[in-house]
Image: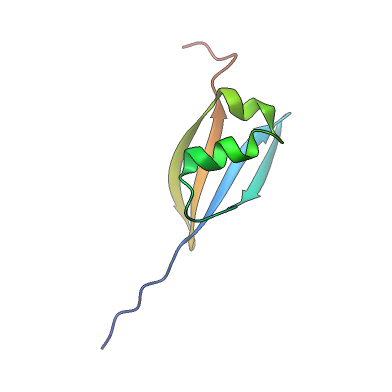
Amino acid sequence: MALSKKQLTREFVVESKGNKITLPDPDPNMSPDQVMTFYSNTYPELVTSSCHGPAYQDDKMVYSFKTTVGTKG
């Protein structure tokens, strides 16, 4: 019996103005940090964000972009 490999798709989530927005993967060859830079033109808060994940949900790897501005710690 042969085992088959299934490619997991990536999904990126950003919180913008209190809303969670799911972003598609622009290029599977890009690193998550490159994807964050790619989307920073549309979502300026990504400039001061960091990438977390992946979390595995169903057949997806979900990365979260979380802002580092305005947090105390």
